[in-house]
Image (cartoon, one colour):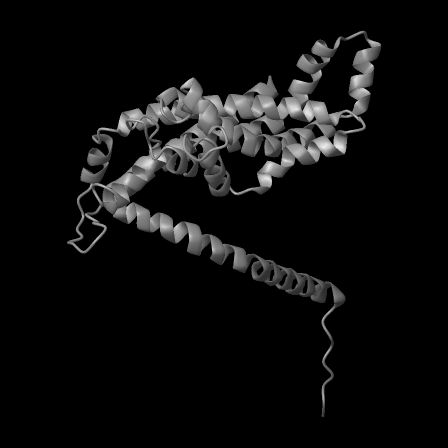
Length: 307
């Protein structure tokens, strides 16, 4: 005698199907995210762990004994004779570069925002230098600034001008390179932010009799704060990590007056001391400083938006 089995009710099958679909979707999501996660682990997490290990160990560039010596490397890094000078110069360069790039980027964005006949030409002309690599641009300007082979060599010799021969001249010559290279990029970011502001807001302000300056101060700047926050974080971070332009143009000179923090890390690791442990310790200090500075910037912008 056979007994018939009753199928489970549809109400009991539905939750199983939902769980199965949910698991399948989760598996698909993990499959898509896995390559990126492996990329981040291989190129960020593992190197960061290695730097932390190196920062607390004797780690000579060439063969030698490796042993734990924390916090000796951090003490040696802060006692380097160029440590405070490099920090001061990097902060000075960061402030100047940030003000110039954001100010000029906003000005260029306002210029090309208008529907003029030459709008497309101007946008392209301002953006073209951004396509050139920073090292290539630095080599180009190194030739331009050369008192021997540069196009201004005769003028420089007759007037006694040296673009890279004095500390202030080297700083401003490098800033000119950076502004030429990155102004178009920040113009593009600002332009995207400006185009996100509705024309109705401007039209209502004009109907109320607001002047151009009042519109810029009371409408454009407040509504552009998210873009200003992004550009400020990018500019400050990039300037604090400046290396290629100074390494190619000035080599830290004249008289070690243009050594940045990152260049000091390079010198500790591959020149002079040849000590990767001390260089790693200074790298960790720079990383922590960047994290703190970026947190302060973002909180400042968020607080201003809430106000």
